[in-house]
Length: 95
Image 1 (cartoon, rainbow, N blue to C red):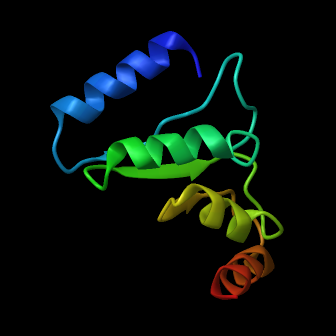
Image 2 (image 1 turned 90 degrees about the vertical axis):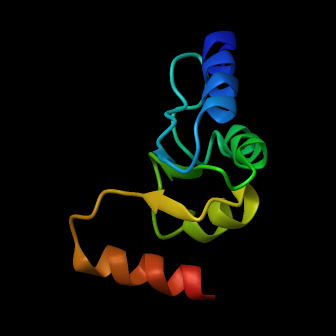
């Protein structure tokens, strides 16, 4: 995570109440949420429930449950082009 993104996150965490925030792990960091799982986990810990961290990017039925377990996120965003993908994601999260 870049120093400026880290700084912005600290400012946001200290200055806002209950809002929804999407932090995109980008440039010189992780290309996907699973690749940036450790960074997302740290954001979840830092947020302390004051804001919701929504993980997105590269999430599919094969990695969603592990990502949720490893990061502690309560919400994920993923592309849905097929109903079967949604069923598989829900099934994997239920296990």
